[in-house]
Figure 1 (cartoon, rainbow, N blue to C red):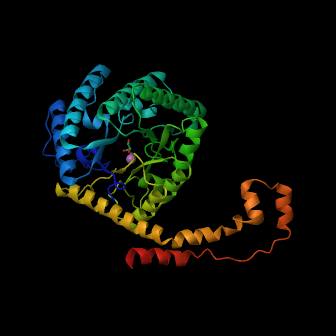
Figure 2: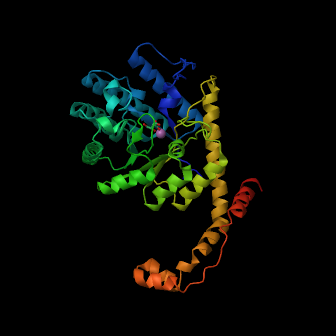
Length: 399
Ligand code: XUL
Ligand code: CO
């Protein structure tokens, strides 16, 4: 279980987000907080590593400005991040906690209101490179296993002011340059793109797994990049979590997971702690059949509800999330070991295992022959057995 459940805690939700939403101010108390920005970063690091250690999550993830204060002056930003990351390294060494991934927040600052790598202004593209370069440097220093790009504002709001083709070319150029830089400084891990269809942009370029994989293949980035699939992003794209995981697995590009869940009643990214064991079971089925996540993991990109204001609620959320994935893993393992679903699916496609179906699959039949065969075949009605399979899944979950 330890090998498959490589849990990570997200710095941003756990130690930065204070409950502020568009309708209300902060609700959460962070007793570690200090008024001086640098002292605050160090106190936050202490609190974070104390939390990781007590909770037992072996990995963590952060954006540059979650851990280290941002600055309008890039050289101050760079110097401070260098110092804070030395402090993180010392705490990693002392605790044994490792970095699953880090990333650059190139979406919050007003500079990035029209995008980062896809900004119509070259100066902003270059400014984004400062943060990504520094974040890659920090990754190598901290022995990060992956590096994430989430393109929150890499998309557009209106075609009336947007050259979409040019923006996507710029994104590919930026990612290629970042990849080459990362490799040149010794980053051997996986670059990850985290798809999301919208919010904050309307038409986000990394819409879902299929779109992202098509983009990466189109630009020859598919050897270095994989996907980081977030459950709530998949649902915003109109997919299930396991659908987007399966798309990645089928393409050999399942890198890592942002483990959370959305709310089926509203249409935005609620980033809830995962408790839906149906969803975690179906996710773990894909992950196990994929042979695991390799150097990826399960990062709780999840936050307490705004009114969950006890400090212990942060523990309770993570513990429930870990238990839900652990139960999902056990059930998925039982399903795979007994093989009932696998044999049902195999049998469903059996007409492609022999004879003309096999020739079709192998590419050794032309289209006229296929159409000629179509005139002679007898088609039998065969049930897809959806209700039976749903009941079977329930029997694995509930006995
Ligand atoms: C936003 C989101 C991000 C990424 C990292 O929806 O999921 O926190 O995981 O930038
Ligand atoms: Co995420």
